[in-house]
Length: 308
Image (tube, rainbow, N blue to C red; front, side):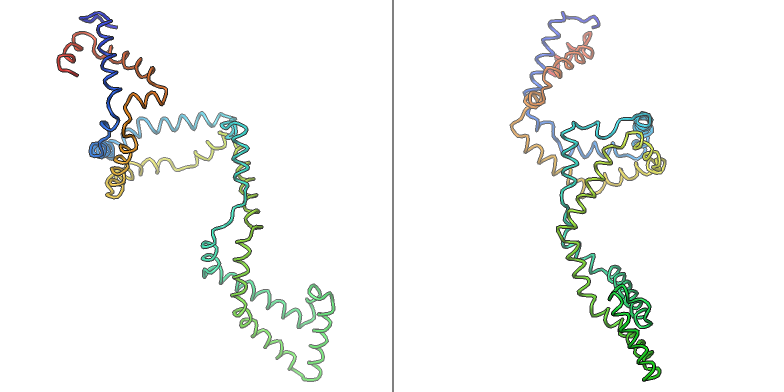
């Protein structure tokens, strides 16, 4: 420590006393919503944000990605074995789909059109093959094919072109049948999606995906991060932050949360929080170290005279 106008013990006593005074202060005395919004306004200046983004954030991000690119550490290594196992087990539990989401999805025009097209195509193909006697074996093991084939041939012989007319009428009825069946089909799809079987299947897939992700390395993550268009993100970030800093609902929410925080910490002092965090001794040592450097010389006398 530089030479000072008083013995070390005197300055140390002054610093100890000021630290105890700080610790005795209520935390709420340092929570000022209006001041916080003013600070946000200053920090959210686009030019200032761009400056600190370029000077600190971008170099930090690049160093982290470069370091990760050389790492074989997996995400699983970041977790104790029991925690990793718990994450995988929890991810693999049945995951039922929200009923409201299922109903809206199944009733959507896109799904309805897709199901209708599939049913129409399947029934049309079936009628064509069955009427010609060429494709019904899979349905009736030969019996249905023979019956339809016989019926088509008999109709052709006895009634001339009536057989073809029957096929045409069947084809025309396909659309009516599909329209009438759509409600039941959609209901069956919804029931299937809401079923316990589907929930278990989704959970199993999600659990396997999480287990696979835990075995991914930091190098693989770095490879994906390098594909991000960071230049575009960095160019937009200051304007996005500045825009949100001026949004009235967000500003009101921040002020309300600070008021709520002060209420939650009512009765707490700076010292009690430091004790709860186990940092009182560390903070005290830093207070002495920084305070001694700042108050070296005659400066600390002026501070004392000013009752700081």
